[in-house]
Image 1 (cartoon, rainbow, N blue to C red):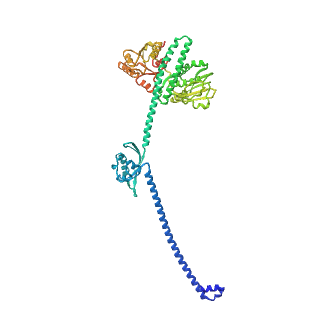
Image 2 (cartoon, helix red, strand yellow; image 1 turned 30 degrees about the vertical axis):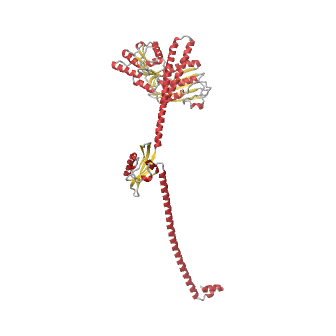
Image 3 (cartoon, rainbow, N blue to C red; image 1 turned 30 degrees about the horizontal axis):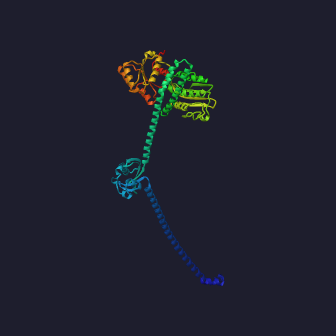
Length: 580
């Protein structure tokens, strides 16, 4: 190598030494030695790299393990903190039902520290006897290895009552063997308290409803009783008068009394409908007679307003139907009354037609068309709501409570029908409703007609005015009438007399109408007498009392005030009478 270096330094060409083979061989030998040494160094370096890489990988694994361990410790701490601070009661037990863990919430309930709880059983706790039911479930979970969720347990402490919603899970070891139980309990005591408060509020609400109902019932009774005296006296007085002014004044009294009665009835009927306390009375009635009766009721009003009122019944409709005629009449009176009220000229027409026919029943459609004011389109959707009127301004020209149409809609719905309207402002209105009615038989059972003189009447009434009204009304038709002022007196008179008809008030001193009716029916049974006709006459409109009338043996119920004609109509449903 030195020779080569000298040659290069001297500028001589290597080829000039080509004739020196010894030097070249020496150079090649030295070069081979260098390559071997470098290769060895490289191998040693690679081996060192591999060793260092293993050390790095090992160190990395240790670092990762330490990190995972740290994370695991952190997660465990977070779980412990969560359990410790949880508002729910949490504890673990081993197979011997000894506490192995408890959070602060449960420790507070047990009145011990967490450390004091560990290793104890329920026998050593002040609240242990309250936890007996829960411990039985813990045993079940440990024995069966199955969880129990959402078990509600109630127990009472000295100062409060607790409702717990418990979740119990089997605690497993690494071999999946049950070694204890984990219990998680939600305190539902607030819900229990809320339930109690809700029950108290419900009781207060029911008490309020009952108080309101009692008030309305008493109000109805107290208004109906004097109204019966006013309207009854007016009905008896009118035929006696000859002076036109006097007749007109009596008619005003009767009209005002009827309006007041209608308002009271509407309020009570709406209340009864809202409570679902109406009774469905299906009876046979004559359609044409019903329409004629409704027409007759409004003849005086349409004459005063000089508007035309007519009814049109479609050809081919049968005369006899079966249904709740009183409720159909109520709906017709509401709709026709409104039509007349808001029609100043033109007409009010009633149309009756078959909307759908089947073998046993017919869906009848009743339409009331008028040429009145009409109703704005934006108001029509609210018309059937309670206390809603087409004109509620302070300058309105028509009076009313605004409950008529609401009551009509509820009544139609109660009968299983539908109601609607078609109207435009200043172009009149058409209100209609449809109900299903069964076809009735036109065969009328012939009954022996009797004169009023053959039908002695026992009038049981404690109110002196009502006594006189009923007495004179019946005498006008030719009935012989005896009066009893209470139920006890009525039973005595019936025991010693012979009566075909008994008109029975319900609320009376000494003995009420219900007890009196029961005793009268017992007398008939004991003496093997034919049953007389007992009709309840009362200002009481409570559903339970009306139902009780029929339970104790009464045949009919008429609410006060009533007209003499109404009374005769009800009697004739049971007894054919030859009126003078």
